[in-house]
Amino acid sequence: QGLLVESGGGLVQTGESLRLSCAVSRSIFKINAMGWYRQALGKQRELVATITSGGSENYADSVKGRFTISRDNAKNTVYLQMNSLKSEDTAVYYCNADLQLGFMATPRAYWGQGTQVTVSS
Image (cartoon, rainbow, N blue to C red; front, side, top):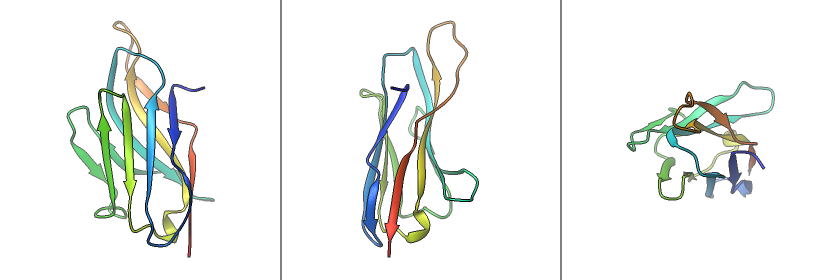
């Protein structure tokens, strides 16, 4: 099991909703920004949304108004609520987090294993 554990992907129809979750699987010193990226078949990985430790959010233009990122710091978990899904949202979604594993450690980015989201029309 990796450090970031994702869940919540699946197959839905156009217009439906899904919620993705990503949890840090063990206790670590500090979690900084967290976010979601996606990679469609044959395309480069792209940013979907990020959220800082203070709760500031950032979204790709393509998902603004439809997706909402949030985090529960007590559970070391980040969520992505996806509404009004479109066929072009079909991709593997990856969780990303900037983690400092120990007090003396250097923060760096970690990735989840990816979860498939398929939107069928």
